Image 1 (tube, rainbow, N blue to C red):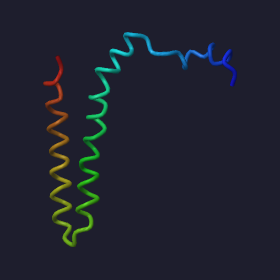
Image 2 (image 1 turned 180 degrees about the vertical axis):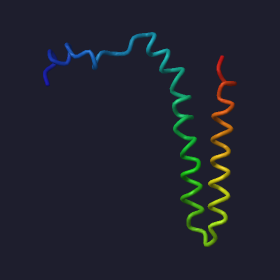
Image 3 (image 1 turned 180 degrees about the horizontal axis):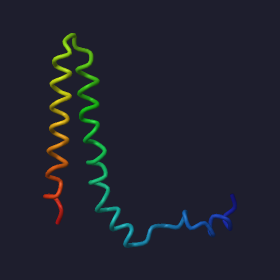
Length: 79
C-alpha cells in the first residue's frame, strides 16, 4: 500500500480534537462494560474445579444479580 493510497482513505485519518476528548471520556466506561462479564467468567472458571456444584450455582446466581443491579442503576452515573 502506498502512502498516496492511504492519504485518500478516510478510515485512516487521525482523530480530531473532539473525537479525542470523547475517547478520553469513553474509554473508562468501555473498560468497565468489558470487565463486568469477566467477573462471572473468572468466578465460574475457578469454582468449576470444586467438587460440589452448589458453589458454582450460587456464584452464577450472584453474578446474575450483580449484573442486573449494575444495569438497573446505570442511569445514576450519568452527569
